[in-house]
Length: 344
Image 1: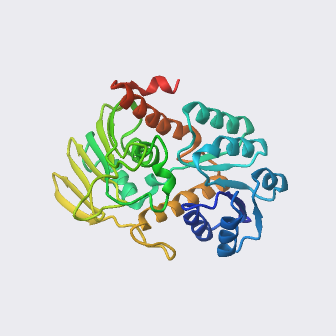
Image 2: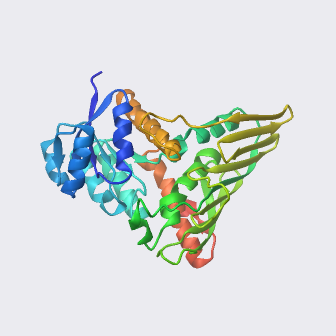
Image 3: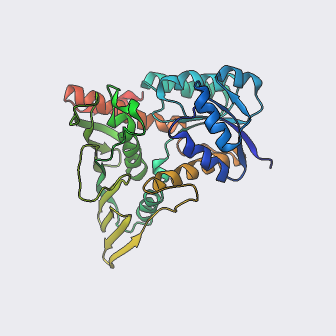
């Protein structure tokens, strides 16, 4: 089959990773880019050799000539751009967080359903090599039936240096980072019935919360804890690693710093290296995330060419997005939130 032609909207900090990954993905090529900032648009256009450049998304859609769109803008523009793609019947990838509200997210999913087009959320963390390795171990019943889990991302990394706008939002760590960690918890242990959350702001120079602890009751009966922090100062900085602990009826899994994967069961303890590949354009310590960008975009191309719903489809991501909303509701009210009721 001929290569799929794509367009990318948003040429900011993270979109550079997506552009690099698109050059590596067989079967697809970006042919047009769009950004409201002409200078940024030209920088990316020159770097990646893209001649078609637009400062207006409507004009780009009107010109057409592409098979899908990758929306890499900030959340405020997501609904309008996804609905624009739906109106032109162009399959869309949308960066996380998917929407500003669950109401918006549901409307975006419905617009694409009515248009009959695929919609995928760029929820790349579950595609990381170590996360996939944990899932395979669990599927192999190496530790029997899981009954408890912990998904932890604790760091003192200055994330604001590359993305200063993150310091300005009333919501921060749950919406920006916790959304990934909550999605990993869903990916590993299944959907969630109820949720209880507590948050804190440690850094006085930001508006939102930079610490969150979230208790999840999964439909399977498993209890897990998601804990995220950008205020934790450690002797060895683990950024950007997600650490995982799983206890099962027949053993345990521990994914610890440095991508050390340890499985203990009746046969003993086996330790392996779950390190991600360092792609030619990647740089440490970002290479874990950068590799997952390539993996999710490769998955998207496979689904467009061969059919089937993307693993992180809009419909699937509603369940992750509901956890984000529930976490903020719980932190504000001090109550446990019925997640299933939010999705009805």
